[in-house]
Image: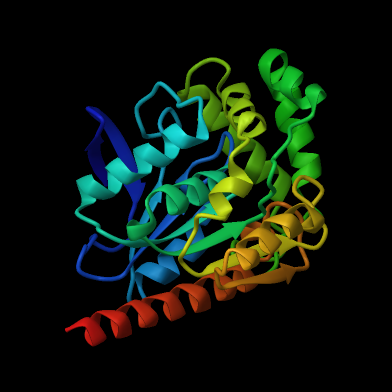
Length: 284
């Protein structure tokens, strides 16, 4: 589905169902040099089980017009504008890796618009090594190979998406190559630089008021579980309801553990939607 956001075309996948703003909405935000398709299983299930879905392509990524945005806060503002274009007042916001920073910043600065916040494979700060930044800028195929090695803890996907024996590294490599080919020069470096430069994460976490779920991969070498501990503590100290779900996976949780990732997200979003409905009923 194409929206006009900030005078440019913006794409959001709706999970194979027509978008209906009257239903509870779940927004999915991808990571660096990825697109909406990383959420294929999760978004289709949501869309066929009571939610409206917007799995976005961030500016400059695949079907959304560029240029790519260079700051996390600018991506969060763009997300708010996309929700305006879709006629959505509030949504459960779900982000993976770089997308988790966008979701966090959005939920903090637009508190009335976030009913829930799910951060998948997150870290605050999300530091990117000099070697990876240099490879992303000057040797992008090498950077893609590096990220593939670090993102996966296994070669084959678990049932049911896409099935036993599926080559996760190859799938992710082709996706990143496609996003690179359709995007502007240096897109990978732009994304990683935005992650590396984002210094507001803990301050933003202290401002979040909606329920939060952290979903981390036990074998994640990119954003290891320990990298989310301070974030969880910050939420708790601010009085925000937060829990952490740990899965047996690396950084690419949605493909390595598709079903358990879906379970963690759907149970959280369903609970958030029920709370929102109950709150609205009590006000009336």
